[in-house]
Image 1 (cartoon, helix red, strand yellow):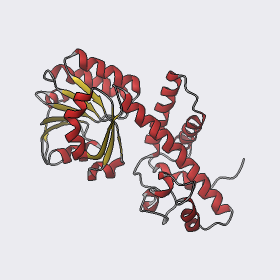
Image 2 (cartoon, rainbow, N blue to C red; image 1 turned 180 degrees about the vertical axis):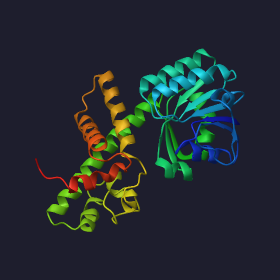
Image 3 (cartoon, rainbow, N blue to C red; image 1 turned 90 degrees about the vertical axis):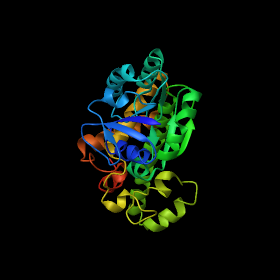
Length: 288
């Protein structure tokens, strides 16, 4: 396949580099220039004559602007594969515009962070036509370890938003519990050994423990240098609450997590730290 790749940032650059090992990839970005790619002068140039155009962009507003630029440049029948994490409304609007232009669109946000993008072990949750999903499935296999077709356009974003709302809530609960265990005099290793094999087990405990030196290697062992930055978790929690409001869904835990991450990022120095750095935040706090 000939692939256009727009958005060569921390996630997009290694994803594009992995694709370039077996496909012709033309990239566009103002910052990165990963090895193996031909670089275009504009997003439209990268999209021209491509079979699939992949976008990896910061938000829905930018996605809509880029889509308006690339859709007229794409050849009939090409696929716009968006791997950004954006609001459901933007994903569905871009898909409708693609269809009107004689194109197909798949919204396929990712889970797995920079490490997953580098190692080709991402998980993709995809929304859009089944035929288009089948066409790009071999690309998912290069960039990741799993791709799930979640239904029509926008459902990939819906799955990502719901997943990360769970993640934000469970990480806060995990950090609260470790901070409480400290104050009760419970050894952290004993805490992990119990929780990781009992009813309190979760990905936040078992795979991404926020306590340094406990469990598998995680950002807590590297001074909370981001694997998944707190401000990105805040972005996803904001998206979850936008979606909840639009769908008239009651999500009190999601809202509470959003508010805590907003306080952490905006007022407590959490920006630039991993989202698991909530643990040292709770360590320093007392009951109010």
